[in-house]
Amino acid sequence: MMSRCRFLFFVLILVLIDSKVKSQDIHFSQFYTTPLLQNPANAGFFNCDYRLVANYRNQWRSVTKPFTTFHASGDIRRIKGKNKNIIGLGLDASVDKAGDSKFTTTQFGFVGSVHRTMDRYSHHYLGGGVMLGMTSSNIDYTNLLFSDMYGGTLVQVPTTENTALSSLSYFDFSAGAAYNYIPPSFQNSFTMGLAIYHINKPKKSFFKEDSSRVFRKLVFNVGANLHASSRFEFYPKLQYSLQGPSEELVMGGFVRVNLDKMQNSKYGIYLGPWLRWKDAWVIVTRFDVDQFSFAFNYDLTISKLAQPSESKGGPELSIIYIGCIPHFNKKIVFCPRF
Image 1: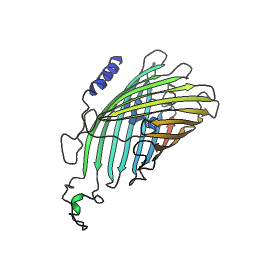
Image 2: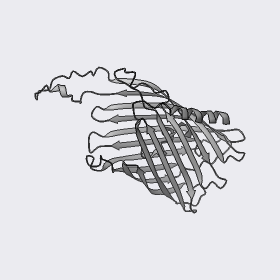
Image 3: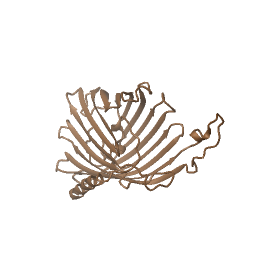
Image 4: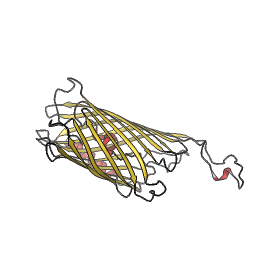
Protein backbone atom coordinates (compact mmCIF):
# COMPACT_ATOMS: atom_id res chain seq x y z
CA MET A 1 0.00 0.00 0.00
CA MET A 2 2.86 2.40 0.78
CA SER A 3 4.25 1.91 -2.72
CA ARG A 4 0.81 2.67 -4.16
CA CYS A 5 0.61 5.90 -2.15
CA ARG A 6 4.05 6.97 -3.39
CA PHE A 7 2.94 6.15 -6.94
CA LEU A 8 -0.14 8.35 -6.50
CA PHE A 9 2.00 11.29 -5.40
CA PHE A 10 4.27 10.68 -8.41
CA VAL A 11 1.30 10.75 -10.82
CA LEU A 12 0.03 13.99 -9.30
CA ILE A 13 3.35 15.73 -9.91
CA LEU A 14 3.57 14.45 -13.49
CA VAL A 15 0.14 15.82 -14.27
CA LEU A 16 1.37 19.35 -13.51
CA ILE A 17 3.78 19.29 -16.45
CA ASP A 18 1.05 19.99 -19.03
CA SER A 19 -1.48 22.61 -17.91
CA LYS A 20 -2.55 24.30 -21.19
CA VAL A 21 -6.31 23.99 -20.76
CA LYS A 22 -9.22 26.41 -20.82
CA SER A 23 -11.88 26.66 -18.09
CA GLN A 24 -12.40 27.42 -14.39
CA ASP A 25 -14.25 25.78 -11.50
CA ILE A 26 -16.67 26.95 -8.84
CA HIS A 27 -15.17 27.94 -5.51
CA PHE A 28 -16.29 28.63 -1.96
CA SER A 29 -14.69 30.95 0.58
CA GLN A 30 -15.38 28.26 3.19
CA PHE A 31 -13.19 25.75 1.37
CA TYR A 32 -12.88 23.65 4.53
CA THR A 33 -16.64 22.89 4.41
CA THR A 34 -16.42 21.27 0.95
CA PRO A 35 -14.09 18.32 1.66
CA LEU A 36 -14.69 16.41 -1.57
CA LEU A 37 -14.29 19.54 -3.72
CA GLN A 38 -11.02 20.18 -1.92
CA ASN A 39 -9.55 16.70 -2.28
CA PRO A 40 -11.05 13.26 -3.14
CA ALA A 41 -8.74 11.82 -0.48
CA ASN A 42 -10.82 13.59 2.19
CA ALA A 43 -13.63 11.08 1.75
CA GLY A 44 -14.18 9.04 4.91
CA PHE A 45 -11.78 10.92 7.18
CA PHE A 46 -14.03 12.25 9.95
CA ASN A 47 -15.59 11.14 13.21
CA CYS A 48 -18.60 8.78 13.32
CA ASP A 49 -19.83 6.91 10.24
CA TYR A 50 -21.32 9.30 7.67
CA ARG A 51 -21.16 12.98 6.76
CA LEU A 52 -23.64 15.20 4.91
CA VAL A 53 -22.68 18.65 3.58
CA ALA A 54 -24.73 21.46 1.97
CA ASN A 55 -23.39 24.81 0.70
CA TYR A 56 -24.94 27.87 -0.92
CA ARG A 57 -23.23 30.95 -2.39
CA ASN A 58 -24.67 34.10 -3.97
CA GLN A 59 -22.35 36.64 -5.64
CA TRP A 60 -22.32 39.86 -7.77
CA ARG A 61 -25.92 40.84 -7.06
CA SER A 62 -24.94 44.53 -7.21
CA VAL A 63 -23.47 44.19 -10.73
CA THR A 64 -25.77 41.83 -12.64
CA LYS A 65 -28.08 38.95 -12.01
CA PRO A 66 -26.43 37.09 -9.13
CA PHE A 67 -24.23 34.08 -9.68
CA THR A 68 -25.64 31.31 -7.47
CA THR A 69 -23.97 28.05 -6.53
CA PHE A 70 -25.51 25.07 -4.73
CA HIS A 71 -23.36 22.18 -3.53
CA ALA A 72 -24.06 18.98 -1.62
CA SER A 73 -22.02 15.92 -0.75
CA GLY A 74 -22.27 12.81 1.35
CA ASP A 75 -19.62 10.28 2.32
CA ILE A 76 -19.34 7.25 4.54
CA ARG A 77 -16.38 5.52 6.18
CA ARG A 78 -15.53 1.95 7.04
CA ILE A 79 -12.74 1.02 9.46
CA LYS A 80 -10.95 -2.19 8.48
CA GLY A 81 -8.22 -4.35 9.99
CA LYS A 82 -6.36 -4.30 13.27
CA ASN A 83 -4.42 -1.22 12.15
CA LYS A 84 -7.68 0.75 11.77
CA ASN A 85 -7.29 1.55 8.10
CA ILE A 86 -10.14 3.65 6.68
CA ILE A 87 -12.10 3.19 3.46
CA GLY A 88 -14.24 6.12 2.31
CA LEU A 89 -16.99 6.32 -0.32
CA GLY A 90 -18.86 9.46 -1.32
CA LEU A 91 -21.05 11.39 -3.74
CA ASP A 92 -20.57 15.04 -4.68
CA ALA A 93 -22.94 17.29 -6.64
CA SER A 94 -23.17 20.99 -7.53
CA VAL A 95 -25.28 23.35 -9.62
CA ASP A 96 -23.89 26.74 -10.67
CA LYS A 97 -26.03 29.36 -12.45
CA ALA A 98 -24.40 32.53 -13.79
CA GLY A 99 -25.63 35.84 -15.19
CA ASP A 100 -28.24 36.88 -17.75
CA SER A 101 -27.64 33.82 -19.93
CA LYS A 102 -28.53 31.55 -17.02
CA PHE A 103 -25.37 29.63 -17.87
CA THR A 104 -25.83 26.52 -15.76
CA THR A 105 -23.22 23.89 -14.94
CA THR A 106 -24.26 20.70 -13.16
CA GLN A 107 -21.65 18.32 -11.80
CA PHE A 108 -21.85 14.86 -10.23
CA GLY A 109 -18.91 12.95 -8.79
CA PHE A 110 -18.39 9.47 -7.32
CA VAL A 111 -15.51 9.35 -4.83
CA GLY A 112 -13.48 6.54 -3.28
CA SER A 113 -10.53 6.74 -0.88
CA VAL A 114 -8.23 4.64 1.28
CA HIS A 115 -6.41 5.90 4.39
CA ARG A 116 -3.70 3.60 5.66
CA THR A 117 -1.98 3.90 9.04
CA MET A 118 1.76 4.46 8.92
CA ASP A 119 2.49 3.35 12.49
CA ARG A 120 1.22 0.68 14.91
CA TYR A 121 -0.64 3.21 17.07
CA SER A 122 -2.66 4.78 14.23
CA HIS A 123 -1.33 8.30 14.76
CA HIS A 124 -0.16 8.88 11.17
CA TYR A 125 -2.44 8.31 8.17
CA LEU A 126 -1.52 8.50 4.50
CA GLY A 127 -4.43 8.36 2.10
CA GLY A 128 -5.32 8.57 -1.56
CA GLY A 129 -8.60 9.08 -3.37
CA VAL A 130 -10.12 9.33 -6.83
CA MET A 131 -13.23 11.03 -8.21
CA LEU A 132 -15.08 9.98 -11.36
CA GLY A 133 -17.40 12.72 -12.51
CA MET A 134 -19.86 13.85 -15.14
CA THR A 135 -20.49 17.51 -15.99
CA SER A 136 -23.18 19.10 -18.13
CA SER A 137 -23.59 22.77 -19.09
CA ASN A 138 -26.34 24.68 -20.86
CA ILE A 139 -26.95 28.28 -21.85
CA ASP A 140 -30.11 30.31 -22.56
CA TYR A 141 -29.65 32.86 -25.38
CA THR A 142 -33.09 34.45 -24.92
CA ASN A 143 -31.96 37.43 -22.84
CA LEU A 144 -28.62 38.01 -24.57
CA LEU A 145 -28.03 40.97 -26.89
CA PHE A 146 -25.45 40.95 -29.72
CA SER A 147 -24.07 43.97 -31.60
CA ASP A 148 -25.49 42.86 -34.97
CA MET A 149 -29.04 42.82 -33.60
CA TYR A 150 -29.38 46.59 -34.16
CA GLY A 151 -27.71 47.10 -37.54
CA GLY A 152 -27.05 50.79 -36.92
CA THR A 153 -30.66 51.51 -35.97
CA LEU A 154 -32.72 51.27 -32.82
CA VAL A 155 -34.81 48.50 -34.37
CA GLN A 156 -33.81 45.13 -33.05
CA VAL A 157 -33.27 42.40 -35.65
CA PRO A 158 -32.39 38.69 -35.26
CA THR A 159 -28.74 37.98 -34.60
CA THR A 160 -26.53 36.12 -37.03
CA GLU A 161 -24.51 34.59 -34.20
CA ASN A 162 -24.46 30.79 -34.10
CA THR A 163 -26.75 29.97 -31.17
CA ALA A 164 -27.75 26.48 -32.28
CA LEU A 165 -25.66 24.68 -29.65
CA SER A 166 -26.88 25.30 -26.13
CA SER A 167 -25.68 22.28 -24.12
CA LEU A 168 -22.65 20.07 -23.64
CA SER A 169 -21.42 17.31 -21.32
CA TYR A 170 -18.17 15.57 -20.51
CA PHE A 171 -16.61 12.86 -18.32
CA ASP A 172 -14.05 13.91 -15.72
CA PHE A 173 -11.33 12.24 -13.63
CA SER A 174 -9.57 13.63 -10.54
CA ALA A 175 -7.27 12.29 -7.84
CA GLY A 176 -5.64 13.38 -4.60
CA ALA A 177 -3.50 12.39 -1.64
CA ALA A 178 -3.61 13.46 2.01
CA TYR A 179 -1.58 13.12 5.20
CA ASN A 180 -3.16 13.37 8.66
CA TYR A 181 -1.51 13.32 12.08
CA ILE A 182 -3.55 12.38 15.16
CA PRO A 183 -1.47 12.71 18.36
CA PRO A 184 -2.00 10.39 21.36
CA SER A 185 -3.66 13.22 23.32
CA PHE A 186 -5.91 14.10 20.31
CA GLN A 187 -4.51 17.65 20.54
CA ASN A 188 -2.43 19.68 18.08
CA SER A 189 -3.50 17.63 15.05
CA PHE A 190 -2.26 18.34 11.52
CA THR A 191 -3.56 17.79 7.98
CA MET A 192 -2.12 18.36 4.51
CA GLY A 193 -3.37 17.47 1.05
CA LEU A 194 -2.61 17.74 -2.66
CA ALA A 195 -5.15 17.11 -5.41
CA ILE A 196 -5.40 17.37 -9.19
CA TYR A 197 -8.80 17.87 -10.81
CA HIS A 198 -9.63 17.32 -14.52
CA ILE A 199 -6.66 15.05 -15.12
CA ASN A 200 -8.08 13.91 -18.48
CA LYS A 201 -8.45 17.53 -19.73
CA PRO A 202 -12.04 17.08 -20.96
CA LYS A 203 -13.19 19.04 -24.00
CA LYS A 204 -15.62 21.84 -23.16
CA SER A 205 -17.02 23.66 -26.17
CA PHE A 206 -20.45 24.55 -27.54
CA PHE A 207 -18.88 24.55 -31.02
CA LYS A 208 -17.09 21.18 -30.76
CA GLU A 209 -13.62 22.74 -30.89
CA ASP A 210 -10.93 20.27 -29.80
CA SER A 211 -8.69 23.10 -28.54
CA SER A 212 -11.22 24.24 -25.95
CA ARG A 213 -10.60 22.16 -22.85
CA VAL A 214 -11.01 22.39 -19.10
CA PHE A 215 -8.04 23.70 -17.17
CA ARG A 216 -6.39 21.16 -14.91
CA LYS A 217 -6.60 22.39 -11.34
CA LEU A 218 -4.06 21.91 -8.57
CA VAL A 219 -5.33 22.27 -5.00
CA PHE A 220 -2.96 22.30 -2.01
CA ASN A 221 -4.26 22.64 1.54
CA VAL A 222 -2.78 22.61 4.99
CA GLY A 223 -4.41 23.03 8.40
CA ALA A 224 -4.11 22.26 12.08
CA ASN A 225 -6.13 21.91 15.26
CA LEU A 226 -4.19 23.51 18.14
CA HIS A 227 -5.44 23.31 21.72
CA ALA A 228 -4.55 26.39 23.74
CA SER A 229 -6.57 25.30 26.78
CA SER A 230 -9.66 23.32 27.71
CA ARG A 231 -11.72 26.34 26.64
CA PHE A 232 -9.93 27.63 23.53
CA GLU A 233 -8.71 26.02 20.30
CA PHE A 234 -6.99 27.57 17.27
CA TYR A 235 -7.57 26.42 13.68
CA PRO A 236 -5.12 27.90 11.13
CA LYS A 237 -5.88 26.93 7.51
CA LEU A 238 -4.57 27.68 4.04
CA GLN A 239 -5.62 26.62 0.56
CA TYR A 240 -3.84 27.40 -2.70
CA SER A 241 -5.48 26.66 -6.06
CA LEU A 242 -3.93 26.95 -9.51
CA GLN A 243 -6.02 26.52 -12.68
CA GLY A 244 -4.44 27.61 -15.94
CA PRO A 245 -3.45 31.29 -15.66
CA SER A 246 -5.62 31.82 -12.58
CA GLU A 247 -4.62 31.22 -8.98
CA GLU A 248 -6.29 31.68 -5.62
CA LEU A 249 -4.88 31.81 -2.11
CA VAL A 250 -7.25 31.73 0.86
CA MET A 251 -5.84 31.78 4.38
CA GLY A 252 -6.86 32.56 7.91
CA GLY A 253 -7.75 31.01 11.20
CA PHE A 254 -10.49 30.40 13.72
CA VAL A 255 -10.47 30.72 17.47
CA ARG A 256 -12.97 28.18 18.77
CA VAL A 257 -14.55 28.75 22.17
CA ASN A 258 -15.63 25.42 23.62
CA LEU A 259 -18.98 25.68 25.33
CA ASP A 260 -18.73 22.33 27.11
CA LYS A 261 -15.91 20.51 28.90
CA MET A 262 -15.82 17.31 26.86
CA GLN A 263 -12.51 16.24 25.30
CA ASN A 264 -14.08 16.35 21.82
CA SER A 265 -16.32 19.34 22.50
CA LYS A 266 -19.71 19.13 20.76
CA TYR A 267 -20.70 22.75 21.33
CA GLY A 268 -18.60 25.70 20.24
CA ILE A 269 -18.49 29.05 18.50
CA TYR A 270 -15.81 30.14 16.01
CA LEU A 271 -14.51 33.62 15.19
CA GLY A 272 -11.56 34.73 13.10
CA PRO A 273 -10.28 36.71 10.09
CA TRP A 274 -9.87 35.24 6.59
CA LEU A 275 -8.33 36.67 3.43
CA ARG A 276 -8.64 35.68 -0.22
CA TRP A 277 -5.37 37.21 -1.37
CA LYS A 278 -5.76 40.40 -3.45
CA ASP A 279 -9.48 39.78 -3.76
CA ALA A 280 -11.58 39.91 -0.59
CA TRP A 281 -11.77 39.87 3.18
CA VAL A 282 -14.02 37.10 4.44
CA ILE A 283 -16.07 37.61 7.59
CA VAL A 284 -16.99 34.20 9.01
CA THR A 285 -18.89 32.88 12.00
CA ARG A 286 -19.47 29.21 12.75
CA PHE A 287 -21.36 27.22 15.37
CA ASP A 288 -21.08 23.57 16.39
CA VAL A 289 -24.27 22.17 17.88
CA ASP A 290 -23.85 18.49 18.73
CA GLN A 291 -23.50 16.72 15.35
CA PHE A 292 -24.32 19.84 13.30
CA SER A 293 -22.01 22.65 12.18
CA PHE A 294 -23.46 25.89 10.79
CA ALA A 295 -21.30 28.54 9.15
CA PHE A 296 -22.06 31.86 7.48
CA ASN A 297 -19.70 34.28 5.77
CA TYR A 298 -19.78 37.48 3.75
CA ASP A 299 -17.05 38.56 1.33
CA LEU A 300 -15.89 42.18 1.22
CA THR A 301 -14.24 42.82 -2.15
CA ILE A 302 -10.87 44.65 -2.09
CA SER A 303 -9.74 44.02 -5.70
CA LYS A 304 -10.24 46.27 -8.76
CA LEU A 305 -13.83 45.04 -8.80
CA ALA A 306 -14.53 46.82 -5.50
CA GLN A 307 -15.80 50.01 -7.17
CA PRO A 308 -18.26 48.50 -9.71
CA SER A 309 -19.46 45.99 -7.11
CA GLU A 310 -19.68 48.65 -4.37
CA SER A 311 -17.24 46.45 -2.37
CA LYS A 312 -19.93 43.80 -2.13
CA GLY A 313 -18.92 40.21 -2.56
CA GLY A 314 -21.41 37.56 -1.61
CA PRO A 315 -23.01 35.67 1.25
CA GLU A 316 -22.27 31.99 1.77
CA LEU A 317 -23.96 29.40 3.99
CA SER A 318 -22.69 25.95 4.95
CA ILE A 319 -24.27 23.12 6.96
CA ILE A 320 -22.49 19.91 7.96
CA TYR A 321 -24.02 16.93 9.74
CA ILE A 322 -21.92 14.00 10.96
CA GLY A 323 -23.88 10.96 12.12
CA CYS A 324 -23.28 7.53 13.57
CA ILE A 325 -24.79 4.18 12.62
CA PRO A 326 -25.02 1.78 15.59
CA HIS A 327 -22.62 -1.19 15.26
CA PHE A 328 -21.56 -0.12 11.74
CA ASN A 329 -17.89 0.13 12.76
CA LYS A 330 -16.59 -2.15 15.48
CA LYS A 331 -13.39 -0.13 15.78
CA ILE A 332 -13.11 3.59 16.58
CA VAL A 333 -10.74 6.13 15.04
CA PHE A 334 -10.81 9.64 16.47
CA CYS A 335 -10.50 12.12 13.58
CA PRO A 336 -9.99 15.71 14.80
CA ARG A 337 -12.26 18.44 13.55
CA PHE A 338 -10.53 20.45 10.80
